[in-house]
Length: 206
Image (cartoon, rainbow, N blue to C red; front, side, top):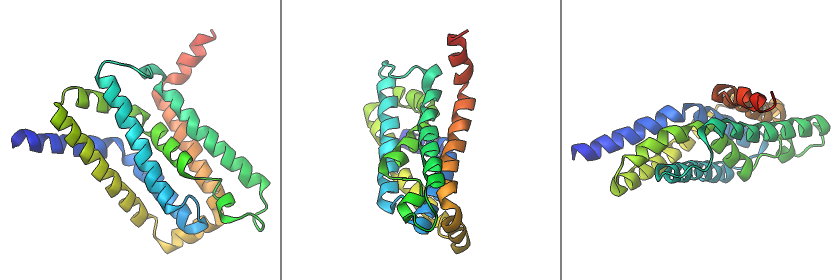
């Protein structure tokens, strides 16, 4: 019983500790959904689950002793939201505010962009999930993944609640076509810088 409670507590702690910033992303996405209609609510939910699933699968594979992406290059995944954000900003510049449809004003955010940002934003989570799954039995590993699945829903609900304030929705309705892609780029820059991958890439050419 103690081991079961310990596994549950560890899973909750690890997920919460590694996904605090993801809650900010979800809040912005739900705000955008309410303000300009994109991404749609179902796309946020499915994208979040798809992204978390990819992170868990990669961590499970790494726990078995196989490395898909070397740890020192994981930060390059931050280029994904950078590309998405730049694309959204370019679209916002080109689109005429009065003529652009709500989806266009949101920078074309959809299922794949949401999943991509979740994966890139949680790329460093792999280094935490891997030892957790490596030291767990099959039963406790499955239990850990189940806790992650439940907490992913809790995160979506929390992001939806935080993104329900009318004043903020009204503000995003006006500036959402800039704000969502800008958040994507900002998150990506932090990911790349914190990963230390830039000096490694530069070192390849020096």
